[in-house]
Each structure stands twice: as structure tokens, then as C-alpha cells.
Length: 188
Image 1 (cartoon, rainbow, N blue to C red):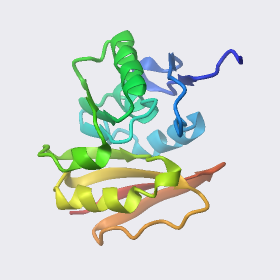
Image 2 (image 1 turned 90 degrees about the vertical axis):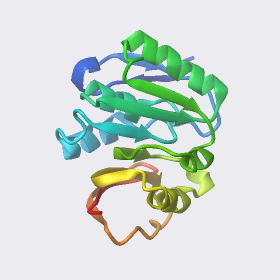
Image 3 (image 1 turned 30 degrees about the vertical axis):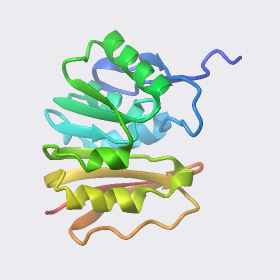
Image 4 (image 1 turned 180 degrees about the horizontal axis):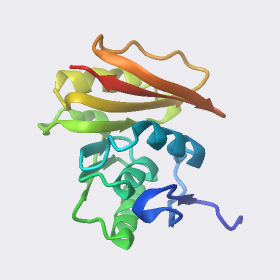
């Protein structure tokens, strides 16, 4: 077994260079280091002190990176029990239990619950499930975004991007391997 299998590295901030483990799980693929580095360069300070949602948390790479860079509160939503347990363990190791809330639930069902709005949202659902359009619609319907919120979208680079709400503006986009990603700014 390779030495770094099922490990991710925090790219920057308070926990920069720390390595965390994640379990084997179908469809679990942490956002690559270089993509996270690019994303957080684009966000430059927009996450610090903010309330953020990592909706399809998986390894927690995006949310933990945001905590490392000063997010005030992070809500991680993850359906798989073993994956959620490893996230809890990683939050404990990093000492972020006061700022990190972990919800073990189906993402779409959770979006139907009453929640205060978020300043930032990371959407990296399993590529094969085609959930981005439904999730974007649910975020709007449930009023889960603050005015001027930032939304990160990641999907298979071979798929067309879903239509976005009219007040969501493309800020930046990129590709890395099989992943295409976009940073969106909500002007609503």
C-alpha cells in the first residue's frame, strides 16, 4: 500500500502542511491540493470570519482548508457513517470542534431543513450523481445564502455546467484532470 494513500495535505493557513486521513469509500476523491490552492488564492480573505457550508464533505478537504484559513464556523454534511466518523476524528486532532459542526445526513434532505444562511458554500458532489442543478436550486429556494455569498462548484470536466440562478455571477473557473471547477459570486 502506498505511504500516502488515503491522506490529504492541508495546503495553507493555520494547519498548512498537516496531513489527515480519510477512509476508503466509493466515490470519495478529495479535491486536489493544486485546486484547493487555486480556490483559496481566488478567495483571498473572503472566508476569514465567515459561516461556511461543506455540503458533500467527504474527506473534508475544502471545509478543513477553510477552517485553516480562519472560517468562523463550518458545517460539514456527510452521509456515509465511516467517512463522517473520520471527519469527527480529524476535527478533534486539529482542535476545531468548537468551529466545526458535523451533520451525518443526506445532503438534499438536509437542505430542506431550516438553517441560517451561509457566506460560503462548497459543492463537490459525487460526479456520477448529477446533483449540482438540484443543490443550486435548493440553496436558493431555502434562502441559504447571504447576500454576496461565494459558491464553489466542482464536477466532471466532461459534463456541461448547469444553468445558474440569474444573480449568480461566474468569478473564476479552471480544470485539473477530470475535475472542472468554478467560483461563483451571488449578488442577491
